[in-house]
Amino acid sequence: MQSRWDIGEPERPTINTETEQLKSELLTLNMGPQHPATHGVLRIEIWTDSEVVAHAIPHLGYLHRCMEKHCESLDYRGIIPFVDRLDYLASMNMEWAYAQTVEQMLGTEVPRRAELLRILTCELQRIASHLMAFGTYALDLGAFTPFLYAFEEREKILRLFEEVSGARLLYNYIWIGGVWNDWTDDQLARVSQFCNTMEEEAKKYHDLVSVNKIFVQRTANVGVMTIQDCLDYGATGPVLRGAGMNWDLRRNKPWSLYNEFEFDVVVATAEIGQLGDCWNRYIVRMKEVVQSIRIIRQVIEKLEPGPVMGKVPKIIKLPKGEVYVRQECPRGELGFHLVSEGDSKQPYRLKVKSPCFTNVSMLPRVAPGQMIADFVATVGSIDIVLGEVDR
Amino acid sequence: MSSQVHQTGSVKEYFADLFNGIKTTVVGMWITFKYVWAVKPVSIEYPEVREVLPERARMRLFNDAQNCISCTQCAMACPVDCIYIASEKKPEGAEIKKTSNGQAIRLTLTQFMIDTALCCYCGLCTTVCPTECLTHSHDYEFSQYTIDGMKYDYLAADVIAWRDRIVKS
Image (tube, rainbow over all chains, first blue to last red; front, side, top):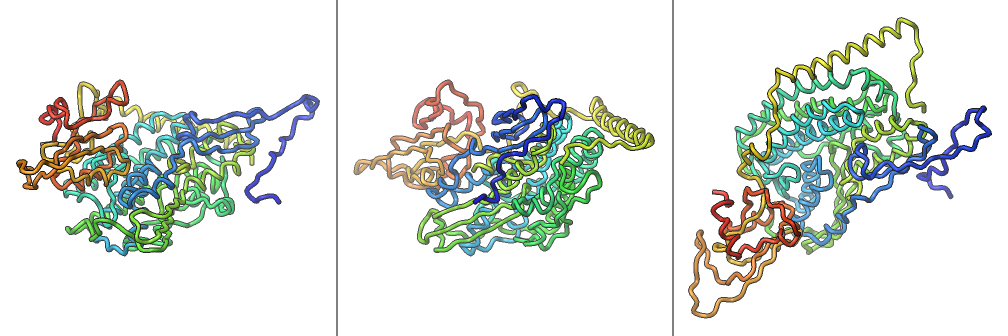
C-alpha cells in the first residue's frame, strides 16, 4: 500500500519534440550540507532536469544531538540549557515553552511580574528572530546590505539580553517558576527607546526590500503553499499565516497573560503575488515585528514591582502523569510532551514537536517544477533552524 | 506550478513595470547611500577596542579555592558534568578554617578541575554555590593549542595567581 507521504517517482518533464530522440536523464545535485543558503546543515538532494527541479528530498540528521534521549538523564533544571540549543535564534521562546510544561505538572504559580517579563523577552526575541530571517533571506537572494541593517538592530536586543541574563544567544534566563533576573528601569527605558527606532527601521526595510522590484520578481508567485497543503503537512507559523489562514496560538489558545494584550494576528492578504508564495510568507514576518512592538509597549505600561520567582522546591520531582504544552514560536507551533514516572528527578520522556521539522517537510511538495534559483528562495522563505529540525 | 510567469502585457504595462523597477531601485540606493555620511559606524575594531562586558556576562568559570567547602553542589547541578571535585576528611584536631561568609570548611579540597571545553556556560553551578566562591569571570580569551589545555585546575599555583586579574570585583 502506498503511504500518503510517499511521493513516489517524479514525473518526467515533457521533452521538446525536436530533441526527443536524444537520451535525457535527471541529474542529481546535492544542495548542502555546507551550502550557505540552507541555513545550517540541511542537505537537500535535488533531481534536476536542466535547471528545473524535478524532485527534492531533504536529508536530515546532520545536527542530531540525541537531545531528547539525553534529557532523560538530566534533572528538570538542567534541561533548560539543552532546550536553548533547539532553536538557537529564539532560545527564550524555547525556554518558556519548556518552563510552562514543567510548571503545569508541578502546579507552580508564576508571579505576575515574571509572566510579564517573559512576554517582554519573548516578544523581543521574536523581533530578533524575524530580523535574522529577514537579513538572511535577503542574503539568499543576493542582497547583502539588508543583512547588515538587520544585524545592527538585532545587536541591540542581544545586548539587552546579555545585560539581563549574561549570555547573548543561549540565555538560560526563563527558569521553572519565574525568571532568573529582574530588569531595571533603565533597561526598560532602553527597550521603549528600541521600540521607537525599530518602528522607523521596519519602514526602512519595507522601502529597501519588500517593494523592491528585483525582490518582488524573485519572490512573488514562487513556491506557492496553499492552505490545504499547509494543513495536510501540519505547517504552522508564518508559513500557515502566509497562506492566508488566521491562526495564531497567542490569539486562538492564549496562554499566560496573552489575552490581556491588544494585537492583530498578521495574515497575508496578497498585496503582491498570490497567497502562500514566498513574498507573502516574508511580509507576514515583517508585519509581526510591528505587532510585537505593540505588545512590548503594553507590557512596559503594565509592569509593576514585585517578585520574579515563584515558590519552587529545591529538588524538582514531578507527579506521575504526562502533559502536552504548545506555544507560538517565531517559526511556528512548538510543543513539549513530557512524561513523568513519578518520584523521579528526571523525566521519563521529553518529546519535542518542532515547527521547522513540519515546515521543511513541505519542500518536496513545492519543489517540482521550480527553477533552482527559485528553490533557494523557497527554502529561505520557510526560515528553518536546523538545531530544531534535528534536535 | 510554473516558477516565474513573465507578464506579457501591453506597452503601457511594460513601461509602468520599468518605471516601478527604476523607482524602487533608486529608493533603495538612496537609503544605502545615506549611510555614507549620515549614520555613525557601529562596528568596533576588536583587538584594539574592546566592548565593556555587562556585569552578569557569563565567561570562563573561576573558583576561589580558599572559600570552597567541597559541597559538590555545583558538580551535581552541572548538566554536562564538567566539574571534577575530590576532597578528603581533615585529620582529627586539625584547625577548621572559615570561609569569607562564615561557613566552616570541614573537608580538604584535593582537586577542583573544570573542563572548559565541555562547559556550556549556562551558569547553573554558580547559582547553587552556598559560599559564592564559584563565579563567572569576564575572561573570554583563552584559546589553547591542545584540548587538555582547556582543563583548569583551580588548585594550581598559576591559576590561583589569576585571581586578582579575572575575578569580578
